[in-house]
Image 1 (cartoon, rainbow, N blue to C red):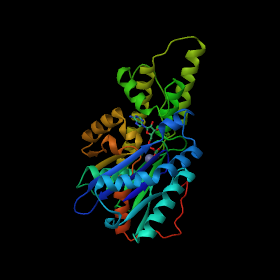
Image 2: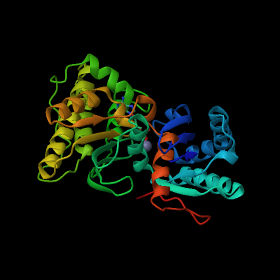
Image 3: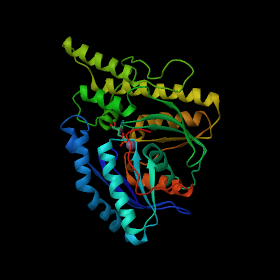
Image 4: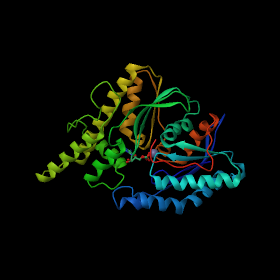
Length: 330
Ligand code: KG4
Ligand code: ZN
């Protein structure tokens, strides 16, 4: 069983791992409606909403899976990174549940969890592979050498990819989180309409900067409004998305020039983006690589992915005890 409460989703899941990889239940309670009012996640509100929901979500996950707590062999919980007040709710609840019932406990790093969502979709997927993790809080190029030997080789130096989608959307009046709506709008627009700068940092590195791209788009929108000119949200969304996908391909080219990988695994909330999925599928076909991406239900934060990674962390010998703490970083 796993618990996830790092940001604005309270989630509990029961998963069967081993020979088979099977999700028995994966309950996700989204707090989006609570935060949309403020245009972003309010940490204080997130923590309080988690504490209200976590107990009932956990018991719903057990009942939907048709499993008793006494049949659970391992409890996994997201311990970092994330909003500290949000993480502490899951960590404390998982510690109590594990200790009161004599169940082993293991902590899971959230980004590793996102990658592991793919193990649930592709039953035969095994490391090594290259992974791109893109979410509201993270943008990383990661070398997955084994299930638990995972090295970040590229990262954003400022905003995360999802954050940039959400902020551009917000300036166009789209409610938080605007990523999914940007995806829909981009399908109706012309990706060549506006030339936006790259989010790929110049030079022989695997890093991104989404802040410059975001500011450029926002300046464009403000400039148009000040001139009283109309702009097309569809064209902005399509051109912004094109700048993002082009930047990603540029960095993947550099990663592949350094080392050959047979598989690319996309993960994280922004892996739901249909344009990014299409662009990377095409990229992989061109480069003779296999492309893996989770189904939409496993792209965003959920506990099933934490359970999947927790299983491998446990197999590698990792254990958590009553001193387990949460951390906003790492
Ligand atoms: O993984 P996630 O649920 O939370 C974090 O760990 O951050 O990712 C949420 C992010 C938000 O920024 C949201 O706007 C973005 O994923 N997102 C999308 C799409 N669906 C969700 N961004 C672009 N296109 C989408 N279809
Ligand atoms: Zn996430």
